[in-house]
Amino acid sequence: MKMLNYFVPTGKTSVVIKSKTTEETIVASEPQYNKILKKKIRVLINNGSASASEIFA
Image (cartoon, rainbow, N blue to C red):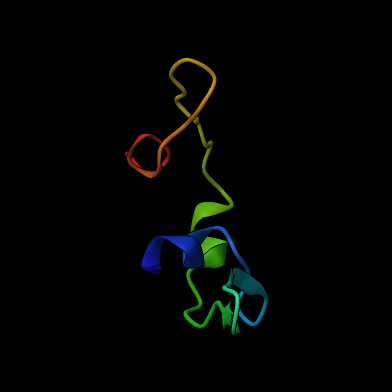
């Protein structure tokens, strides 16, 4: 979850978890967002999909 704070502005929804009985919304809380905006981001994919480890590597 900490890594999401680099991509989602503080106070914005970062994750919504839904199940048959509940729905939980997680909001970004740490002000890390501006630190990564000044850097280039590359996303590595393999066979048309990207796992979390590939994205955050």
